[in-house]
Length: 83
Image 1 (cartoon, helix red, strand yellow):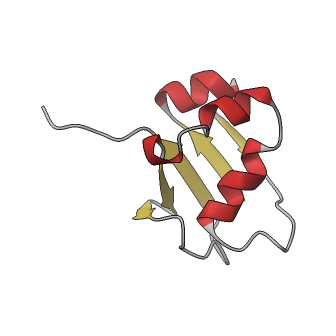
Image 2: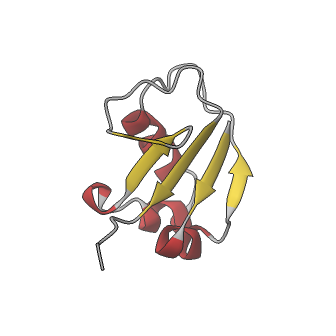
């Protein structure tokens, strides 16, 4: 699965994107965030405030309970505001 990071999430992790292979026990977006946060300091800082990070699976906005099953891409980004 490809993980794509935007805005300050990208800055804190230090990558724009990467291929990830979470273990089979990681089944939801929330579990994936927990797994990523445990990968290192940059990830831990990026995902420290779970309510400040949004996710999209294959370009569709999702919540923490959404299964990641057959997704090819997950994107993480801060909340967006209108303008």
